[in-house]
Length: 469
Ligand code: FRU
Image (tube, rainbow, N blue to C red; front, side, top):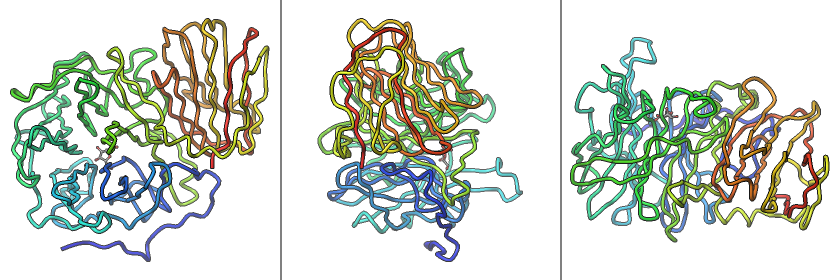
């Protein structure tokens, strides 16, 4: 049995005021996690958690876009529609892998017990496949993993990879009794039959204890292994872990023989207000590329009134240098540059306006002289004044967004060397020191936006600003 979209119920967009120009978003309806990132038959594919019938989270489908260049995305028909016995309550997050020229999706089937309590559910894992990268068939032997091995409440978000001729997947889980988050490791030879081979990571063994680790990811990068996950319920420690949930990473080593991952304490990957549920994949030229959901957590999303909700981040390339995970925009982003608005040396003493020809679709690049001390600020204004700013002072960067709980922090002990910012109508992505740290935020401007740079001392810097198409 395979479900179909009810086209008569689709929600449509009524207003473009917050629509991004170059980020992945729906053509109507709700979006959350990126899923199934892969390269297949000449296209990059991104799927996403999708509710096509309203701008609210609902029974999850898999929306689908593809691209030849990682920056221009084409909407394709919905890939997975829930409602079959294996995914009665939703097709939750999962991943993709190519085997024998066939594209496999491995995803979580979400099921409610039917007592009206949305927190009363169980989960299993399923496969769907495609030979054209557009039309998907759910595997007739689903589910491929029917239940967790023990007393787990949550059991979802499979991320699959291949190693030494075998397939592995990690699943996020939570022990019902102890409330600890765990990442379970499974192994297979054919993607269809899986056995659990261990608990790869358990929050009992690390300092910061999340109660459920959503969207786990695992990959080998620059000679080391990396575990990424989105823990729920990490406690805030001053200026760290300030969001309701965040994306964390640990760098270490997976011992395949005993299925244990030994790694560093969980570090926060992005310091902005809106960053969650990352997924990565390897491009044909061997780059590790990551996309996240620019998650609202408990914030309002004014675009809901316009018939849609949610965007994904731009694709970012990961690398490890000196034990630190960098994330920076993929190099393809340069192809979005329409023309330069500023290119050359800029001297600031006080406040300088940055004139942008297409203010809501802009890229800013600033390179600072070596010994930058004192205060420096980039600011986005709307008709009410300052809406969002990035300020560097004494080894710390502060993002300040107008409204409640506006500040987020990152320490930049090496000082600030460069700052790169992408603005796209209702999102800002900030990269400091070539991606040593990033901030991802949604913003909703009241009227046209303008920009300024402010410094409390005279400083000359190199600026390269572009209008993006
Ligand atoms: C993360 C998440 C996943 C789940 C999906 C459901 O945002 O909660 O754990 O699979 O969203 O939409």
